[in-house]
Image (cartoon, rainbow over all chains, first blue to last red; front, side, top):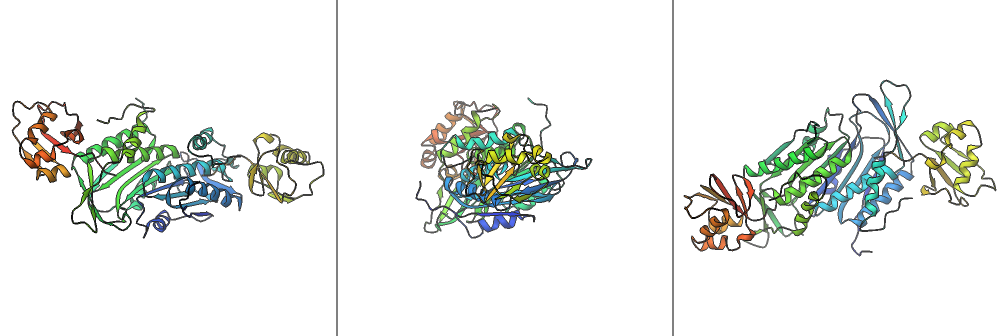
Length: 167
Length: 167
Length: 83
Length: 83
């Protein structure tokens, strides 16, 4: 649609924790066209002390492919200078990182909107499933989807572009 | 209006650089109700290599007061668990930090919206003025306001609340 | 054809994946769910509400009426809760 | 009354601040701008487009018609460009 050169992006799906500072510096050090850095970090809440751990199951291969699809849509839709998305899987205790989105751009609106957009789609369209293990229960419980997350994702359809495909 | 206890916040106006990681950890370490951390970092762009430095003038006292006013509006409007705003002044070379907003919350939407809101108001309502010193020019030039920044700030009037006062 | 199950579909079927020979009568992803549900109690439980189940074919989301011919991998899973 | 100037208002007036005795005839912030503009060329240049100038009284934004009585500090500055 546009003949602007689109920016590359980094997508990783991993069991290990990530380092927000190190990931940010990769996108900013020596990149003096960057005026705005938005980072979103999703953490495991302890649910008022009741949660033992979250267990994150994912579909290897499809997870990376889906996240990369949204990342591609984001760099096509917004004039970003850099984009990194990392999503963890496995058992995650309260207080630990789950997901990271870093978007950089010359001006702030692009970085805010792109990271907001990506989180909405990671919540509802990337093949990850959360199971809550509570301190007081022997069996884990699969986390239910929230209607608000679908509503959030739907916001990005109404305006500007048609290049987002939700099945 | 609501009887929810509002969260405190930290506002600093300083010449020195800030440490995004250290500031983030203050809001997250030991706070296991935090599910979402949004950080916005505004950096000095080099404007295609033409910029020597930005000079940021501010109105001491009023700068802190205005930022605190917006911070108070943000913690009243969104269910945040923490909020830190730091704005630098003085001479800032390309690649250096200018401004930091960190908003934490249980769910992501509050953290995204609050940080987005605060940046819009910092851009247009906090008493700071930027002067560009170019490599090739002996005289600095005051940065002009951008109509888009006023439009961005106006977004927050249309919905939800009337507790934002722009003169 | 390779079939994969995730989250509570994996738990209810008792397997994370299997390879099946697709019967001639099963054309679509929806028909495959019906056919699987008829296998035993665990599969019946897994597929008791097919409208809540998401389907991916060759790692792309598809609908129930998706034609399976030429498919290498079908996955069944609940609505996603990542992020 | 303390007056403060920022950015190009500071440069054009040649001062970052001064203390003045408010004349009886000057009631509002707008009238104060007129009165200051009449002082000399630098002030005239600083206040040549009063509609572009922002005003703060005791560190709160006010409009041109703001009554100055009881004011300790008035500040004049261009539209802000922080963030």
